[in-house]
Image: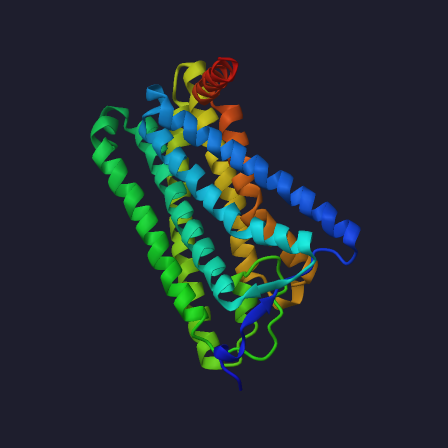
Length: 313
């Protein structure tokens, strides 16, 4: 069988067959991409510029926004270029880069989401120890560990995936180089089984983190329900529920994408699932957090006033 060096490029999934639909998909993807850039950019700017938001919760939210920008910038620009120029090609190195950066941002983002649940647990269940457990040094260390974990995770999977022997078929049934689709092109059963084993081990770690998050939120909700102040309960739920919604969408779609049986797999279903976990969270995160968080809305409103003043003068 030919090895991976026999393949110089891959062919991604064509989102439409007619030129009109291709251009329509281009404009739709461009609108989604600009919305993600604007939303995450505003959150990043607001958290960085307003001292009132220099707290652990918003520090991790800043990291989440940066990771979301990286995730969506890894997939959509190439998909938009293919739709605009009526092509499906992506180079071998470009495909490997997509897999590397996507796994890097996904791995770091999941770690940040796990840390955010711990931050909310300490803030609500152990408020007297919050300043000690979540000081600036501890937050910086946890954030660095999250980014480092994403890097190691990405290196492990990218090296394992692109060291496999591929068949002459180079068609990837996805609008980006998704690792699950790349594995289907393998001709070497030992390489495939090795990388599949690594994926299952990674999913076990993801599930373990998810159990930790669920336990944390059980403790959080028990503490919130004991609060005498209705305003305090509302504030606690307004910061926890959006995080739980984002996490549930991310984890459920990723687990379904890699654990679904082949009998329920189809091109349309795979496309929808990948869109849900790679595109929807980066777009929805800014909307969810800004709508449910009064402090962030106030900061964004002040930021908008400053921008208007600068443009005027």
